[in-house]
Image (cartoon, rainbow, N blue to C red):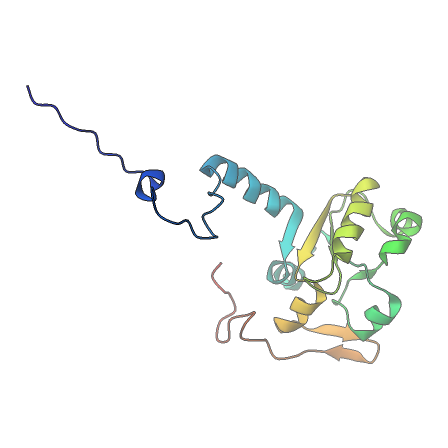
Length: 172
């Protein structure tokens, strides 16, 4: 009778005795947990390119965009068609300006600012369906989408580090 030794092929066994790098010091979540997390992330966030594409398509995009910044910031530049509703005024004005049956997408300056998150929280607490636009106004401009200022329409060339140079779609 021949006996075989089972082969252990796990990352734990493979890494036994090795120094673990900072990426793997905390192991990745189980696939089901990761899927739940990333699914939830998509429920709460919208990408700048996806928002721009939906707004540029014919017809109603099915959501309204809210710029949660100050009037001075709005005048400096904002997404065309956005509603100006500074976070501090949401509790007072949201129900007069918005329809609770229409989802809201909030944005602020950019990834270094959590103003869109605060605005989204305030709207959700009032009963609105809401998503936050990742990248905010900064990435709207950096990706080369047209915007409006107090002086009129404006647009910059897309930053090659944020948008494909020779394609309409980044493929993600």
